[in-house]
Image (tube, chains in turn brown, red):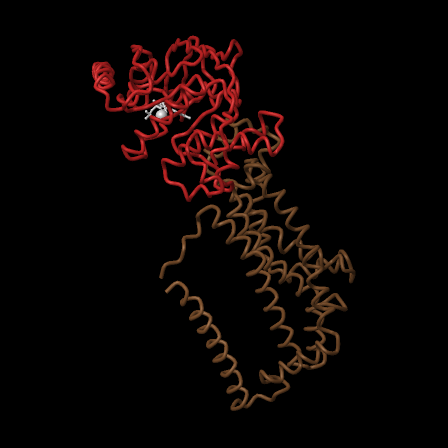
Length: 261
Length: 262
Ligand SMILES: Nc1ncnc2c1ncn2[C@@H]1O[C@H](COP(=O)(O)OP(=O)(O)OP(=O)(O)O)[C@@H](O)[C@H]1O
Ligand SMILES: [Mg+2]
């Protein structure tokens, strides 16, 4: 039973996508929408192949991933530091919580105009958008995670002789890790939104730029192809990088019960 | 596995002196008097048990010895030095095991060594292994905390508390959540460890039979504000059996004192 279920699940998922693409093809075939507005799946696939062969896709993907890697690392460090401060200081929490909740409601694309004003067309502006998009959710999750730590862990740590300077990295952050990781995942997703939004307007390379070019050239297959790539990579990293880390943590803590269906 | 014959070493236990200690809590402009004028000396290597009605301040006293709380009046001295804050000289073992879920068993036990000895990683691991074998859980070295049963968790918590070689071990009702058989096994383990390490131990319990089985001396508290109403010395040879009629007899006399108090 346990062996069979995942394979069956995968089969259903494959079937689901097949039906989805089939529906798309049907809609394309019988719909009255011209194909330069609404392309077929095959046209999108061919265009994707062309973009890749022309050598446009890989540099763009690399550029976006690189920006995310660097920008998100910074967002993560700042978010963790601020979250830690909010978690241990009552006053910092009171002051910063509403601000970060507010920032979190701001659509990530709304950071683009101000970044243009501050940084002009330089790449710095993209980093700025990524950081501002991703950092609040990391900070909030960290702070909330810390506030929910059972006090007994802190007391156990103190009685075991943990000096004050070691509390944050030995006890507080690890104890809040299951909550922090959800913020880290959310932050990644929002940062990814921010990166692509910023690239739409102010870059000459990147997934957002390819989207923009597709629109400029009225090339709807390219637009959809790049959207698919953007979704795919966002999902891939979410599942295979953060998802794996999260699962590992949840297993260690015993939060992940073995699925018994 | 049988290689681990080199027993971990333990240093001299400490003398605890509680002098005129009172404690009041203030909550919502209401003052609760938890303890009143406690005087007690606990000798090196003595196993002392606190019993008393619920809310009489037993945990409060233990927390003050651990350094989590400060007395409102009076002083607590360990080997002549005043207790002001938590320190691994006075290690507390909690009712809920309080093991760190982000560490495996052996890392939990070796954690406290980091702040005690100038050990490198290898030596820390070795001492942690020795303690793990003292609580008979060698094969669970790499297990996650959640994989252990309640009794096993408490034994790991015991090993973790003893690893940094505290002068005094404080134990606050560690076994109530366990079934009777597991508890009795733990009493055996605790006595064995007590004899082997020669630690000073102060423990709180509600179970008079547990008190008689474990303690060299049982200190009985009155209802709130807690005062010491009687001390009963238990001079039975160790290891004691929980079901020994002699233990039962002493348990009854403790019970009688408590009922008399109510
Ligand atoms: N932090 C605190 N703030 C206010 N009151 C407190 C605090 N801690 C304990 N008290 C009060 O002090 C009294 C003694 O509490 P304590 O927990 O020491 O009792 P106890 O003897 O351990 O009881 P039990 O056997 O039920 O564990 C209680 O009335 C409790 O309400
Ligand atoms: Mg208590």
